[in-house]
Length: 311
Ligand SMILES: CCC/C=C/C(=O)SCCNC(=O)CCNC(=O)[C@H](O)C(C)(C)COP(=O)([O-])OP(=O)([O-])OC[C@H]1O[C@@H](n2cnc3c(N)ncnc32)[C@H](O)[C@@H]1OP(=O)([O-])[O-]
Image (cartoon, rainbow, N blue to C red; front, side, top):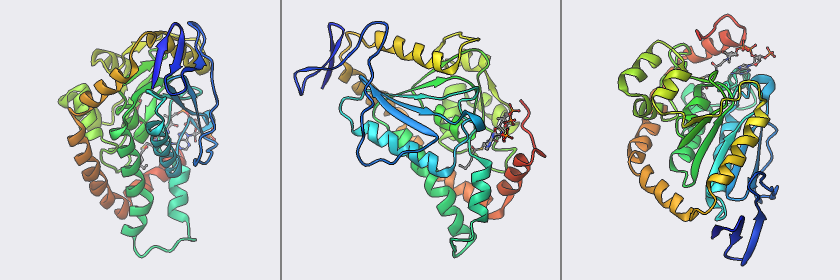
């Protein structure tokens, strides 16, 4: 059990502070977590009650392959199991939070002749359905408070995961979320069939999904999707991440942190059933599109810059 007393996180199990936390800077431990592999695109660490997951591949705008999404799910499980963790914080790097599914990874899954699948259905069950359903489920059922630090835009599956977070902070007013399913021959995924109408209203969700229109900063603010804009237009993403973490450190001072988890559980109970149901419906609906091949054709056009999203 973790309690914040006189500027220190007291670990009640060991009867002394586990980390020293000062008001303006947070001491860090790079805790070695057993049983989890490393991933060059995603790092993680714990800082006091915060489990921090960071996307660290700004070169391709933090696009993620299927295995990376699985890794995100595994990290969430790790945070879930750690009794010292109360908040799971998602951070990124560079100018985008994440540009979504990596089109090179999708081409790889299609072209991989080392695995023989019994059918196209079997191939996409493995390369799409199982992965998507797993990571979405990990976000839906996560027991710690999920905080997303949006340093820039998020697209596709990554933007779907952002919409499953409990608190979203933005670095500036240039952030947007794009769910380009109609442009890619896909349907809603990652729980967006429920999360977007819930957070933006049904008709606004329709307008943006049907016409492949980004949710820009104004809409994100008006709807209350963004809890706070840190308004750091000329800062780096690292400066933004540090500032958010310092502010979070101050915000949790004096709180009885198990109350936060109790409230998360109650708030989560409002929508968890519909999210669980839609997670399965979404991937089953999407499967026919993958088997038919339209998403592949369109992802390949995206990769060769023959297709663009309207932003
Ligand atoms: C899980 C299955 C279901 C999937 C659901 C989804 O997530 S659907 C959503 C799927 N996602 C999308 O539909 C988004 C696709 N991306 C875009 O539409 C545009 O890149 C942009 C609007 C994000 C930024 O435009 P901009 O003019 O500001 O920048 P730029 O274009 O010059 O990019 C800079 C570099 O990053 C690279 N790179 C970027 N994204 C990806 C990617 N996803 N993959 C790989 N690489 C990517 C890009 O190739 C370039 O590398 P290069 O050539 O320098 O070696």
